[in-house]
Length: 199
Length: 387
Image (cartoon, rainbow over all chains, first blue to last red; front, side):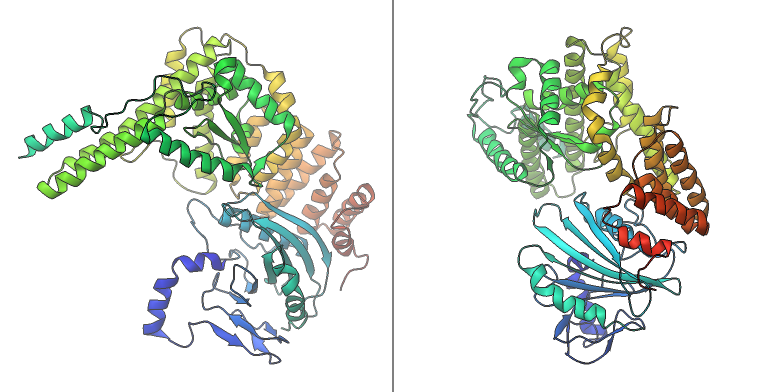
């Protein structure tokens, strides 16, 4: 998750200044233009402007936001391969994350998200509220909703995810925000982005 | 030079940091106890603030019956007069832990409740934490740490290459470990006095060691037994705690009440939830050990169902075969929870046994017509959904 990105944000900025000053920074995503996301073939066309964060939660992922990732966080996971984790592990030795499995069904995606969050955020307060079938990039997929609370914060957050297993890889888009105001304010824009997903 | 510094250090340590005020003579659990010294007041203020935060947190389990049971066990263990100074907070966290704040706020994790076998073991944990409170261990450790910090600061100024700071740091952690051992022994004394089975205290640590080994093996790590506490360890090793507690319990250690039935009755409504939190930790070895330990040879439908979920979530092809077997066994043993058919169906589908999997999912939907994942399951059966 991007939250971990912030911890080494300063180091990343330092490196970025030397290595690739333009590519590594945060960037504006223009409205109405198709854009490839998460270093993958997944393409979306947002109808409003978003901000893309330079820090990625993992290798094949990318985060967009309006007001900062603590307030609204849209994350793309573009083709996570079997035996890979959803995002970067906090500690491979002591807190290993669950991995995408070749045998996974679309209904296992919410569980993968739930267990990954529980371990990475160190919180037992994560509930998948429901799931239903919904096409993702024209393929059979799933839509699910969840709520969670990060430890030492006590701020209830809501989330919604849309995903599918396509060609053995996991494609997923999640949106999460505080339950108070921010979720309802941003979820329409998220759904538009998820609806526009193409492979 | 070095000898002179050590002399100053020891004098400072002996004086307890030269703090003139002594702990108040009244016990901290007394009614309306007010800390009198600057240090104790400060620590209580911090603890009060932490308690205010925790009290309103969604992570606290607020069930009246569970909290009443915890208070009852504490009161039986340490006595009616003492237990009134303590507020117990059951915190939802799937790891073994419990802690005590200097103001009488006690925290017990649900992971500890899942791992304890009977009331005697719970009483041992509560008695141990109460021992920290009664002996004002936080205050003593804070003062000791401050004194040692002072000495290290002066030493590094006067004699920068001295090895004294290293020994002092070691001394500090050794002191914390001594406090833990003292609290262990106090917990054991309370346990014995209340008529509980004294061996209960050592059993906890013996099982925790086995669980840690199982976790390590499940993650393909080397099992590393620690026979001595490390330099920075603030607790003694599980091994030394188990040995010391067993030795102190003496030859009469297996006599006494373990109040197994009362404990199981209190935990029955909670165990499925605690287990669900445990198996989502991606700790296959530890969870499998814990389930076998809970089953103790007699696998109940509830435990079989959880074991099925554990195997299904790991999801290797052979795990899916095992998971389907566990769900089927749970059903054969009279499990009525629709989730068993859901798990069975999903395991079979993932194992490419489509017809049998769909049949099990159909049974799930018949048994749980209002399930929140109804439409998604119907899609897997082939009835509707987006194809």
